[in-house]
Image (cartoon, rainbow, N blue to C red; front, side, top):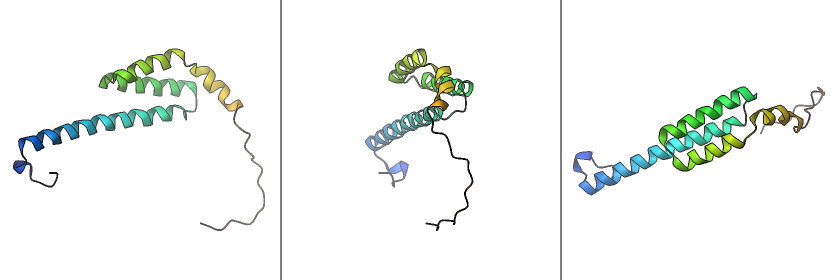
Length: 108
């Protein structure tokens, strides 16, 4: 069906193709929202994290993804962003900044 010229597709094939394209567009938008939300946790500070979260919320509302709208409202109302970014560095292991003389490792 996909390799046929559009003029040669049956009405049923055209409807099926429209459904597939529409579903994939919505899936792509969900994927973009998910990836942006994951970047929220990598933000350097609370201010940029809040901005990222607001952007994700706007995208969710624009697309009217109802289950995500409910999730976002709960997440936004209960998440303590300032505390998360203020204290997250306390939980990270200290990086060793000491420079050591050593033989270079072989490349893989």
